[in-house]
Length: 473
Length: 97
Image (cartoon, rainbow over the protein chains, first blue to last red):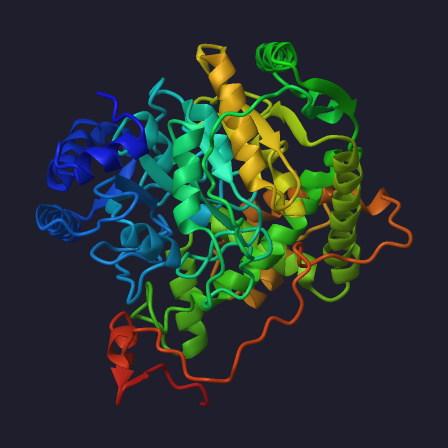
């Protein structure tokens, strides 16, 4: 059963056509029916029903309830939330109950949205398939033998399984867009700093962003509209657009859209390439001017990413020391042993790999060769994107070079796994907004079309994505 | 051909405060070597005249008034997740022998 648009759901709740409680219970029952996909880690049974009843009462009394009144949603389990544990899909935080809630969730609640459950992810968001979760992989809703993509795999699967109308994800190198692409839904990564990261488990602070996963572009825009803007608890937040992020279709006539030739060179699945090029033709037929552009450093972006992000990971994950919260080894004889044993037991293999790579590239003797060099390559990449955005308004290409792969296929080959992110990491390194929308099917699995725009052009990007989405229907 | 030795892995693990088994050391030696060879492609890139980037939206030294902010969380709530506490503080094992 389809939920319909978020706008309509909120209208129906506000007008009393349906109660918030009914919607929350509907989410609960779909969670029960779809248990074998392992998309959900915990359910907010108590607080969500309490909030639903509160909203229903307010409506009865004629009080104002907000633009997302009664709309259920799923949060990736790296958002700090009340009522449920926040595990980051790790043994480290398996029993961690957050003492405060993330800003993004607080803002959604203030507009009447109701968080019903927390979704599975790669442990600490380290991964591209959700197989690195300490609590088992999530299965792809279209084909259970395939991965849902990652790291927000549980969130993307939840939306595809219709557990809720929207889910929240985090995107450090593609973790919203890749699973959206693999599961056939919409995933939006905003400009860096547009949504507060306060109360979200940090991975790589210079690229981490928060964004919505939805069925339509309009839904993504409405959720972004509620979450975005400065927050006194996150010093990296930026001003939001003064206009509403509405995700309303406009016209493609006269829009200059660049096709990055590096995304079509090597390593792309032939069927995926065909679907994307068909989409580009349709965009052209809708009146856009298609211009081939080149961003040579894109070929270095993944290497750059796998220096900078592990470096930041090694620093951010040093806080998990077994002393203040999280898993703590009770057998240790001294403090050092307590650190080492707690971290050994609390982290998954991929967490340990990234911590050690990060420590390596930051260690004396290697710092200049790896970390500093990658920071400079980042500048080069930023300059190349800026140059291209002088020529075109948007960029279009595939979200990933492949469709969802089989569970287990890449678990022993990290580089192969990392390559899934090769088309998404640049947007994070450059800080620009990017969206993945359904483009069609290849290999019987969904393909995502990725669109990018200059920093702070989130509103225009959502509108152009909505226009392309409309043209695909 | 791998640049990372088992000894390097043991040193990295120690710096990262991670206890590794001998099997893990062998596995990570292999895996990290292949990842490091991949990131080495950065070394041939010409970056003459460019400065490093660590912040992408141009923010610099974001400050706020030096005033108490109410985060709405009590010390007791913050200590709730701690394995051991004493007198409203985190209790850890002896550091100095």
